Amino acid sequence: MSAAPVLPSAAEGVAREAQRQRALLAAIDDAPFDTAALALAGDASRRAAGLDAYRGNAAMLAERALKAVYPTVAAMLGAEAFGRLARMFWREHPPCRGDLGAWGDGFAEALEANAALAEWPYVADGARLDLAIHRCERAADASFEPASLDLLASVDPALLRVRLMPGSAALASAWPIATIHAAHRHDAGGFEAARAAIAARTGECVWVARDGWRALVHRIDAPAWEWNRRLLDGPDLAAALDVAPPGFDFGAWLADAVRLRWLRDVVQVDR
Amino acid sequence: MSVRPPSATAPGVGIGLRQPHYRQVVEGVAALGFVEVHSENFFADGGAALAVLRETRARYPVSLHGVGLALGSAAGVDPWHLDRLERLVQRIDPVRVSDHASFARIAGPAGTVHGADLLPIPFSDAALGILALNVETVQERLRRPLLIENLSAYVGFDDDAIDEAEFFARLCRRTGCGLLLDVNNLMVNAINATERRPAEALARCRAFIDALPAGIVGEIHVAGYDDAGVLAIDDHGSRVRPDVWTLCEHALRRFGPLPVLVEWDTDVPPLDVLLDEAARAARLVEAATPMPEPV
Image (tube, rainbow over all chains, first blue to last red; front, side):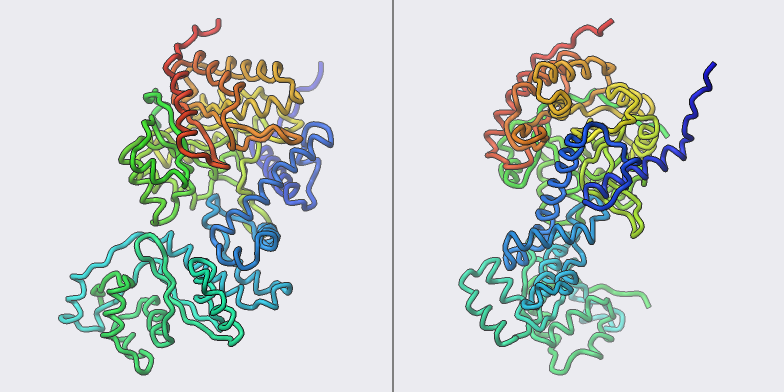
């Protein structure tokens, strides 16, 4: 009589599958992998063709997903260079979520660290602007509450918070990132101005906020940038005014913030 | 907990909602049984895409078809993903929720990685156990059954031990989920397995369909595939091939009228082309009468 086969326990089976799954992802990534754990069927050429199909898909996805988040950087670098960088970023910083729209954080830092891009130091800040726009356009929907402005006249500013639209972002760069962005995205005639601003190392402060479904890039002055950035931290209005930059005019800012749809509402906070 | 069994929802023919057709679909130019979307494309907190989906939902039933749950992953289901999916289900009240019998998540030395692809799992007891556990986790959370799609796989495994149709039958029996039968995926696998012997490939696919228990299939997918390279690839980038229509018809005769989705994800054509494909599918659904159960 032959002995009964020894079946793996459920836990052993899960561990074995986990090992196989790590091996398959490594094989697709062209990294060293455990051939025995993977246990692919078929002859060598069939196995290679199968892995190549997955590799091709990963390369295409890397480029497409990153281009959706960083369209200006893709335009700045051109398809070939951007594709190469996207594939490298995929290997070094692979997605951790099943939503590729949530992948791509850290690309600006990767560009900054890339010696081949040292000649174009503004590309990394361009990526930061692209990411801010992408996040803004995926942020929660909200509408301006004009009646909430009445609180400004009736409540102690120490008990008020001025809330900006969800997804808004403040960026400051030593480079003309808004001018470069405009040239690539909607102002083809702006390249000459962008080149001149880069040559003059003209820094820009930028505010990103949604108008309807689209995020708009506003060039703002340094005091407004400082004020907006501070408001994003959520201080009460009195505290924010206490440290407002010299020359800052809250009334003028409020009128602009309403007109440009940066402002969500004013809310009373508990003390 | 108890989940509702896969319901015999009213059959109809649907198309995938893709960005180039947003405006036309929202305006209701197409007579469709349902509209399918990839769930993950609507995971954002807000924004234009979600607004389009809400408007679409006001006109059509919507089927949420996921590509990222990675239900075959030994690392389990991502709680973040499940949170987002649950929120989307609550927002849209879909007619069906589905995903694939595939893995993508691994726990690596530097944290969890998601391969962002529909990667194959072996047809084994261990893989079935993992898949069933993950399907149950999602169904418990959503309080509704899932449909799980059979995969087009470009690699297989030495230790495949269970016939694929039997694998899905066991999964459905164990978890109460249904099968989303993608006949294009069947065809692509069969073409690659038979090294492009069309008659043999079709026979394999028919045998798969005939081996499935009646009542587990909740939806059928058709699409185009690319047969120009070393392997046939399920690229959803062209009209449905005649052999895939043949299989769709065979499945509808076997199971009776079921919802059919025409998938087209790359090189998306004008809406009229998709609607033409959908009209062909609708004729097959209308003509479908179930065959007697094989004895």
